[in-house]
Image (tube, rainbow, N blue to C red; front, top):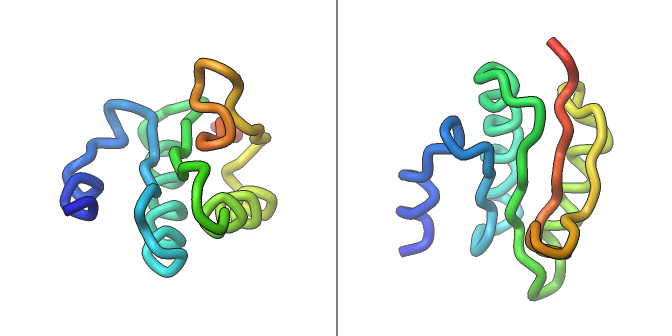
Amino acid sequence: MYKDRYESHDMASTGEIYLRHLTVEEAFPRLDKSLSDAYEAGFSQVRIIHGKGGTGAIRQLVYQVLKKHPLVKSFRAGEYGEGGAGVTVVVLSDK
C-alpha cells in the first residue's frame, strides 16, 4: 500500500523525497537516486520526509548518507512548519 504511493510520487515536480514506511534497505537506494535526480532537475534544495517514529533508523541512514554525499552542500532538521524532526532539509551543491 505505502510502497505504491512512493513509486508514483513525482519528486521532480515537488522537490520532496518520501522515505516513510520503508525499510533501511529500501530507503538507501531511493535516497541516493532521488538526490541525483533532484540535482539533475535543477533543484537547489529538497526535503526528505523520513518521519519521526519508531527507532529513528531511517533518519540515521539519511544523516549518514548526507554527510558523505558529493551532491550535498548542507542539511538540517526541519523547523516548525516544515515537518520538524520528521523532515530533513537539504541544500544541494551548485552546478
